[in-house]
Image (tube, rainbow, N blue to C red):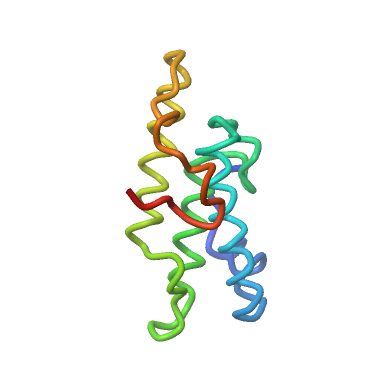
Length: 115
């Protein structure tokens, strides 16, 4: 899936209430955890099927909430870490090794495992 236009994003996500957008952002976060854990970097487990578009929608969803309604269970810093880690995993898989085997995303499917 290519990057969504503003109009497509509005039609797909913003027309729904805040509860739906929280649910979708949670789904996208779980997709990231699975991609980095048991999914072993398989892009098809992502809602969009691509890292860049997946993260782009996460950022847009996160920004769609008012300042006092932003989810406490996901920060912009964590979204950027997901993006960095997912790109690293993709690149390491293309080279034939997985650098994330020691960083266990599998243990905490609902969030990034804290070191």
